[in-house]
Length: 122
Image (cartoon, rainbow, N blue to C red; front, top):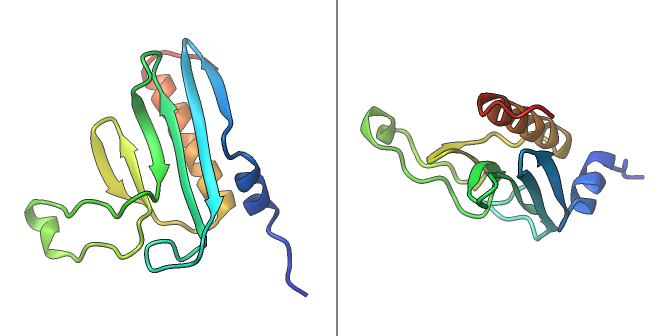
């Protein structure tokens, strides 16, 4: 008997929901189950994003596409096969997906840090 992953069920249930965060900021969840592939080995496609009052994404974690190849010394490393990555402002970096639970915790930490940096209290 396969053990249920309640955090994955929660993550999937968040699909399509938006939540106000104060100061006009809001978060959006887009999550769906997909076939496992090299880019999405965990079998989910997701985009968890924090937006400013004008609708611009200021923080997010998603796997919509593979992270861009790095420039400079980091370019010697291979481009990750998995599509998981994080956006902070205009910067993009790889994200190590461990589990749905960890993704939710990491997203929450990133949202809190981004809002704190902008002086928004939750």
